[in-house]
Image 1 (cartoon, rainbow, N blue to C red):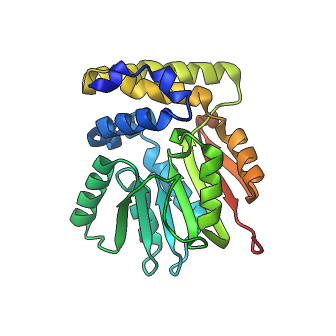
Image 2: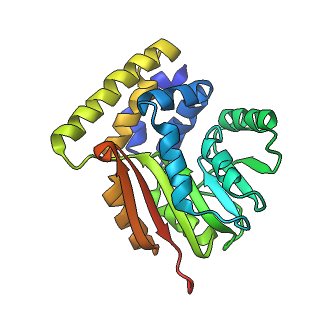
Length: 249
């Protein structure tokens, strides 16, 4: 796999190069994505995703967009809450969308739409969606401020954005131990599943650069979101950030 030849830290610290690394990494892990997400979350992943959907307060008429949808877990959960409105999932990795579409066929969820696209450069019209969600997506984009501007553009006035992602525990020793856990377990899983320890070691390395739940709230407020906040799980190792678009925006 050629990604091993891409020096991870050189790529993920560069706004220009990070997307290259992320694209290649997620193309590699797509077939194992659901399994590894469950393992790294201590089996709590589905519970956290359902909490995000609960907080989204989706109504039957809402138009909903799920960014970085991966294999479609959150997208399908949103569709369960929204039996009339349109639910769209978008992801930059064709392999993820292929798995999501296979789930869609198997589940008979024909009303759910999946698109391949870069969430920093989407062609959806402004003021299109009542709710926009993201699962483990904000941390992976090379330009978080640019993403928030794009989300705010696409939201309808009064709409809400919610993001589930790995977080940063506020307690330093706990945070250090958690990052060490992710590094050790990720390296082991990467070697077992892909013969490349860096595949999942990317997660703790990306977390070192990620602003965490408090930083994300500040960035959302700076971008123009209102009523911003977050809820955390397991002492801050995971968090859901949220914020809204003003009625006069």
